[in-house]
Length: 321
Image (cartoon, rainbow, N blue to C red):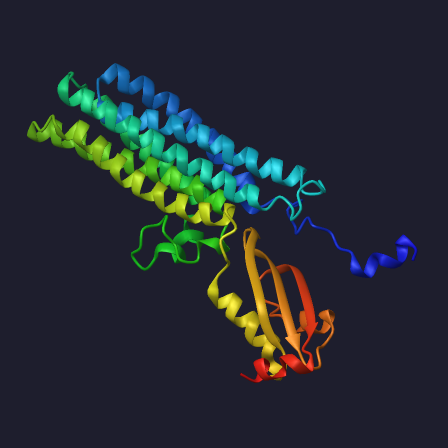
């Protein structure tokens, strides 16, 4: 058989990963904003003596690094999309970018705790007006960054009051973008806490509020990072895909009552992209192509493999049972 005759049975494994994702350009924009504000806050934190402000600047430094990794993940996934060395395309680089960002979130949360404890034990004088001004400026930049990354796109993920990093349907979303979004959200949180701490210290003399707010922010950021780590870990380790999709596939395959699914594996190979391998046994089996046509068309099944077995006479009683 000539190679050209095989085209109907061959397909690309890029699954759209060779195209620019919406989050790529926005991530580069936020990376530039965060890097600029990071430099301002670190210098201002040192000059004014504010731990909350310095922690915010260090936090932004971590996020500038993480955002750079998120941006590079987009570029690498796109440029390597047609590389045949990646069996199912480069979609999982998206999850890897999210996982790396989550690890950095946790590590720099520990740095915030350490710096805050040091400042509790060794307080320094704070130049309040300048520190408050820079903290407010940081909050404005972080808020703008969150809007650029599409905060409204994440609203449905945590609009029910759940933690934004713990989303029961997060496997359907761009986890690399979610990582970048959580980084700027954490920045906004630490800026807000810095403002509250500085106001409390200036007007009520609560100097201890400054480092305490750094610890509070670190706890919340750690909580978010752990949620994102769980989500991305499941994808990187090929945990079975959503039960609702698996049940739908099985129901579609078994619609003729003769066919029975004996083995089914579903896993994520990219944002909202799944691969499925299913084994079917029947007395009068359909062709693999016919079983594929029964598959749901709106659930992101991009790579489908069907193995078909005919049920022999000796196996009939087991099928009936």
